[in-house]
Each structure stands twice: as structure tokens, then as C-alpha cells.
Image (tube, each protein chain N blue to C red):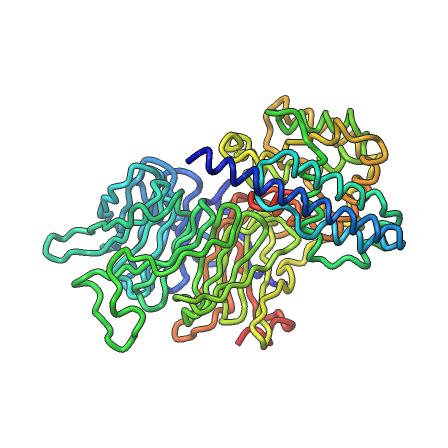
Length: 195
Length: 379
């Protein structure tokens, strides 16, 4: 039974990879035509559903990353992006900011100071206490059960290069301003859609 | 001003309930007691202290017609309090739970009450005349996690529950000898006790605070992912609407009319949601006018100060609310609101006043009459 499930997962993964490759080609052609917003929309649409397959996740991240880095004018991006994309866009941060496992909130804070300077840490500072008040410390204990929920998986900041971090922080600041803390909470709570 | 009365009763209030004439208020000051206060000559005076529970009282409901108080607690028991003379006399109700009781509500006819618990069960309690005893009947093996809230349908049979497994469910609580079968209603005539009528799987995270609209046609509940859900046509083919909002999650909701809902929660400020002519629900506004900060957090200058604050906190283990953005300061509530109770006028179906209580120990009375922009929705 377990073998059959594993087979389905692998089969499914192949299909997802093919779909992502197709998406990637479409994005490249949109970027060549000078339509970065269209490219980002395409990248955000049809994220692979619940999959634990690392290949799918990183393949999808490469595509989203490509589209994200092509955005030059963040204000223009938000004026032409529908609010329905906000929640998906926020999920990008679930991948970018991956912290060491088992980190406490204070450690997350210190980590963000080390990595990114004050812009990001100020954000953590204002956000983390409120999050804590909503009981999100409990997630840490739950994380063994539902690994997707572990919001301190802030991998990318340790692997991501400086331009990526800068671009992501710039977009994140505007996104939080536009979509509010509710958007972050939805992203944290979402166990079904992975980016 | 929407808030017409504010009173600090305690350090923290877990729940509160009003007497039928709204002259007295019963609340739990975050311990094993229930305090009853009365407004005598512009001053709140403590009249009674109900002491019987061993642990924190998590739910209080005061019945309107029979003037009885039901309390539930983390000690897994429930008491029904009857006023005899000037005393409140408790009757123990054995719920048969192995985890804390979390919430309680009298049914509309006041012949039953429902208790949600951490034991993944719901207790339906009713009075047996011949034994002079409250009997608890359990709905077992239906919830995958704690039951956070219960709400009675106006027909006295349907019960909606929310749970930390993220689901909202509707059950039949028909009890032979207590409820009378109504032949007219096609939907409820053939349901047995404990039968699940509906399961809604809309939320990805914990669900809290469920309520029915006054007519029982619409159901509203909230998720811990900053979403509120509205469900019409509760039955085989329900119609659901998910409304996402930009602020911190809600804990409880209240229908003030068929078309307007008040939500309270972690943002310390009641939110108003309303349906337009086509039945589409949207966020309208915050009820409390708060002093808004000029912009988002300022970078740089405040940084080192805030850094010190954070360090001080973690060292000395002070509460984590010292670092707060300025928008929650200056509001009527200064901490999470977890309880909202209507103040129903006798003979009127619409609600213009309600009270909220929360972790800051205040009970705040709100009035919607003065809110002219909301009159359209508030029929």
C-alpha cells in the first residue's frame, strides 16, 4: 500500500515538473515581450498542490524567483496586481525565510538582524509579539505533526543572495502595507497550498 | 462614540453574561469564581461570589426566562445556579468528561444546554423531573479536536459547533421526551440525537466563535487564519462565502441583524461585517475610533529602543505586549477580546446594544444607534 502511494507521488511529481517547465517557457516569452507583471501572475498561478517533493518545490521556486526578480517598479506592480494574488505572493515568503529548526522567536529576531540589517528585523519586532499573542507559539510544538506549518523554516535567507533578499524585503514591506497582517496569518495557517 | 460604557472589573475576564433585565452582570475574573455585580446608584457593587468550581470558569450563560445561570469550568464539571431568596444555590451537573469544558450555551427554549469540551465531545444536558437531576448526553467521536464554541439554532434542535480541527459542524440534538416532533418541518422531523447534518471544511486552521443569524438561515464562524465564513442554506447543499480581512484573527462573532455581524478578537477592536442586497458579505469598518498612527513603523530611530525592550522582556519574562504598534494604544479595549454578548430588548428581534470582554479585564458596552452609516444594514 505504501509502495503504491509512493509511486503515485512520484508519478504526480513528474507531471508537476512538466507543468512547471511549461510555465517557465511561458514566463520567459512574457519577459521578452516586456510584460513582467503578466509573468509574475503566471508564476503565481497554479502552484503545485500539497506535495512533499523537494524537486517540485525548488523547481517552482526557481520560476517564481525569476519572475519576482524581473519586477523593477514595486509600486506599479501593486497597482496592477489584483488583491486575490496577495495571499499567494505572501506564501513566497514561506520559502524564502527559512530559519534553523527549533529557533525561538528571539533567535528568529537575532538571526534576521544578522542577515538583513534593520529593515527586516524591525518588521519581525513589530510582528512577532502580535503573532505570539494569537497563540502561534503553539505551532512550534505542533510542527512535528504538520511540517508545512513550521513558519520558522527560513531557508532562503541563508541561501539567497543579496539582491534576492533586497528585492523580497522591498516587496514584502509593500505587501504587508497593502494586505495587512491577516495576509501573513493566512499564509502561516495554510497547510494545503505549498509554493 | 460607539462605546457608551467601559468598566474595569478585573485583571482579566474569561467570559461574562447578563441577567435577563441587564441590571446584573456575571463574569469570571480568570479564576475559579464567578462574580455578580449590580449597578447601584451609578456604582458597580459586588453582590454575590459563586464559589464551587475548582479551576478556571470557561463559560457562563444566564437564561432569560428561567433566570438560571449555568457555568462550566476546566475542572470538567458544570453547575446550574438557581436563585432562592438572596442566595444562588448550585446543582452539580456531571458532564462525564475527561478534559476541560470550554464553552456553554442555553438552548432557546431553555430546557437544554450544550457544553463544548477539550475531550472532543459535546454534552447536551437536560433536566429529568423524576430524578431531580440534570442528565448529560454526549455527542462522541465526531470532532477530531477540542470544541471551541457552540451555538443553538432557533428551532431548539440544531446545534452548530466549531473545533480546533478547523471544521464547523451542525448536529441534531433531538431528545425524546424533551423535544416535541414537528411534522411540518421536513428537515428536522427525521433526525436522531447526535446525527451530523453538515460538516464545513473551509478553514485551514483552528475555528472559533460560531453563531446563527436571528432567523437561523445563516451561519457565521471564524478561522484563526484571519478569515470569517458565512454559510447560507444549511443542509445538503450549503452556500458558503469566505471573507478574508487584513487584520489579526477573530475569536467570536455576533449577528446583530440578518445582514450585519460584529466580530471581535485579537485586534482589540470590534469589526463590522455586512451583506449587501445581493447577499455578498464584506468588511465595513472598525467600530472603535482609534488614534491611527501616521504611517507604518518608523525605521532607524526607534530601532535601538525597541531592541532594548525586546531584550528586557525576554530576560525578565514580562508579558509580550509591551512592544505594540501604536494602533492598539488608545483604543477602548487594550488586549484581545474573547467574548461578545448581546443586550436584547424584550420583544425586539434586532440588537442595538452588546457588550464585549477580554484579557484586559474590561467590560465595554457598545451602541449601534449612533452609527448612522450602518443603519442601512441594521434592519
